[in-house]
Image 1 (spheres, rainbow, N blue to C red):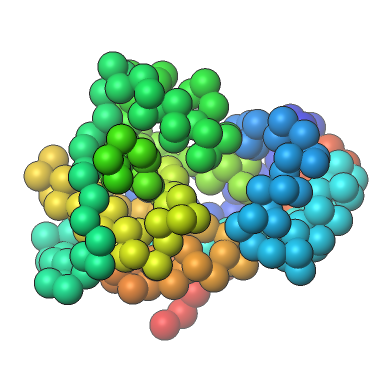
Image 2 (tube, rainbow, N blue to C red):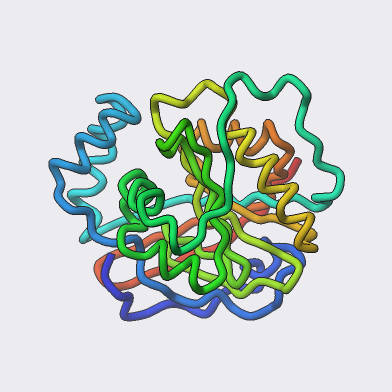
Length: 247
């Protein structure tokens, strides 16, 4: 997505959706990096979602230079101190650790899983972000990247400064062959415990409203849905508004 030429002033509801965060307006940022090729993108989507969704995503990708719309759903957890994993959650055992910049092989594996992070993860860790990785032997099975400084809503081209006792789940991913092993839940509850130990009170995160798997995982571990960001782009003009989710 190109740099926008115009962004309307953020509506007041925009600040209220992330309840408790500082009142500064969302600011613009670059969208996720350009994929390495359309054929590669189609192949990855086919592996993850099947042909039906892949065709829809491909058509949307082809026309997005002219018109693009997206709905991004935000979650938050109020009381991290009350989170406890169920005793039977571990269907398969993994090794968990917090990455450092010295873990070069593991970082390379993660950047291969999440291509938008390619060439960026070492810098993110150096800047203070936390990456919890789940390993099956030496193989990365999944990871969760946490940002303590700001919330980055890449898919709607926005970011927002966080309070000192809040954190943002930048990205969580489980490799396809390790899905249905409860690893996503294990990563979440491990992150909750780590954040509590660091004095974090709330963890925020979000995903596309169409990402059913991610929504289901968030609900299953206790996240509460608080709002949708509706984003539209026509040529070089952007517009977005926030709408609360009731319930």
